[in-house]
Amino acid sequence: MPRSCCSRYAGWRAKPDLLRYHPGVLARAAALLLGLWFCLPASAAGSLRILTPASGRPALGPTQVTLDVLPPEGATVSRVVLELDGKQVGLLTAPPWTATVDLGTGENERALTAVAAFSDGSFARGLVRVAAVRIQETAEVSLVSFYATVRDEGGALVNDLKVSDFQLTENGRPQKIERFSTERRPLRAALVIDTSESMNTDDRIGKARAAAVRFLETLGPEDEVALVTFSDEVHLVHPMTGDLRGIRSAIEGMGAKGGTALYDAIWKASELLGGEDGRKVLVLLSDGKDEAQSGIEPGSLHTMNEALQRALRDEVMVFAIGIGKWGTEQSPEADPYTRMPLRDILSTLGSATGGEVLFLSRPRQLAEAFERVAEALRNQYAIAYTSDDQRKDGSWRETRLTALKKGLSVTARRGYYAPKQPPRASG
Image (cartoon, rainbow, N blue to C red; front, side, top):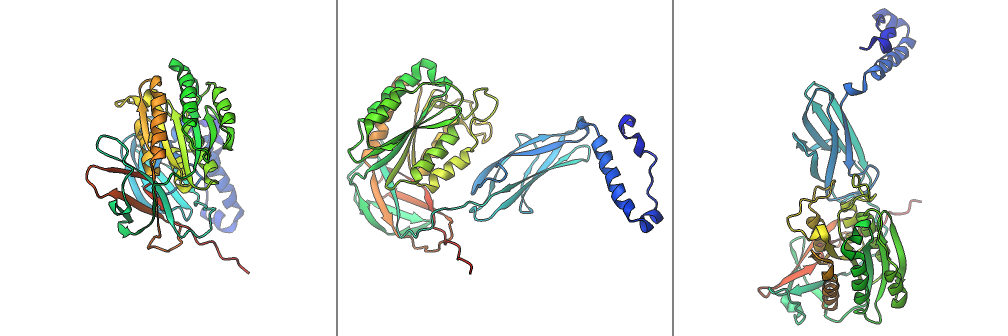
């Protein structure tokens, strides 16, 4: 023990009789021990921090747990044990210190603990409390509705199927489709455009402006659209409107600078669309991973998982266009927190919500990509059914829609959250 700091504690001894007859000594003893602890050099103790999920924020289902583990000087990490509400759910013995943990339905707060054991016999502990998911919607929903697109083996859209050509299941149980239509429904769309500094490369921002304007020309008279841009921050440049002249002017004024708050943009655009009725679509264009302009920290406050959950809860279909790094199929680039390759991030967002994802290697392909999105939106099937599970428990229900004809692939969202019974008023 460094004498310069703690020599005043060296001669102290606790005598049993003294403790028996002088209770106040206990408090002084505790203070002395606390002093001894703070006298230890900073390098003497290891540390552990839980980076994701964030403490105090809601999360549910399979969630990426990311740890920052620092062993004491001269020691190594022997193992890291993950516990959820006191029950072991994971064991890590080597970096990277990441794992996927199922946090359940999000109905209740959960305590996630990580304990690291070091080779010198010491330990470090981290704790986060994952908040319960608060579902604002309390109105009873009798029908489950969603939209789907169908393509053949060559990738061409198929728009002449009948209800008898489909099979629908919920949590593996067959369901009866009650409403089926190929009639084009009004569209509520959020154009979400990356305006980070990297979009200046090869005039990506200029070609994005031109392609987005062409997308507006494909919309119908009853459609509405909003413009959201993101760099270091997310901006609602123009609110939802049917006045496409105002949106066009806003698009033509877009510039590019700063970092990439990708997940915050998806979260906020989904939140915006959540207040709309009908077909809700998020059309996303981005050229890179979520990161600050410095390149050494995330660009968003929200995580990828939180952004996806928000889109699912608000029943938003994500149609994503990835350009640049996204378009490189073997790119080693990955999100630093989820460890997912860039392509997998956009693919997950699209497939889970019932949208589609396109990857481009050159900016000049943007116009064609926006046209493909518009074509898919013009050829969607509207489907609705009454679930055979009438419990209002807020649980996730997995749905699967398939085409009975061979060679056809169906794109539709993979499930929904059941309505939740509002709490009874106490009186």
